Length: 287
Image (cartoon, rainbow, N blue to C red):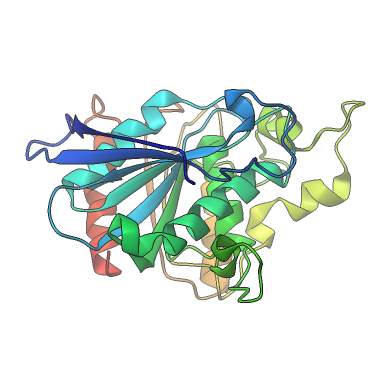
């Protein structure tokens, strides 16, 4: 059985706040593949926030940032509540981070997408409108799920694994994309370093995600600040260029100023436009 808790939580972000139903479930109730122990950090979960009203609802999986070493709280629940305020369900995934290495974080994100599709009828979710959103290293995790995914496997023993892991939309917020010259070195090392602290050059190249874009990559919304000192703006520019080359629809917003890690950016009048811009974009693609 799924381990779950259910209660109600008000949205405080939007003026027309709605009451959201909040439910937490383990991604693998019988134990996550590759778990190193039995602590909370070894048990990836998903917290679903469903808007008030009648479904089914479009849904966006949320991957908070944190350099693949932690997860930033302000990039989790507040984002789900904002999505609720525009009539979309939000699902915050607590993916595993260091000392876990690739592919574990991306597998957790892909499992979240599959689980939402498998339980769509029970949870009032539209299985054809499930996107993924990530900040910083969470943006790399989300973008990995959006570029390296698996189709439905109807022969899988686990019913969840019979669902496709391809998201229907990608939202990448000041994302880590490349592990090349403009990389965020800490994120790369937390994801890829071996016991000797070394990174395999082949994996460094493989997970430079501007190289993984294909015509099957989902429509994408990107935003960054031009003077981001943590993750250079070139990460978003490289990905946008690859999307253009593969004729994947995308929106790119580069704001002139703002530090890394802004989240909703409620206190920054310029960058704080991104949620409304993103909401309009989601509506334009059917969410």
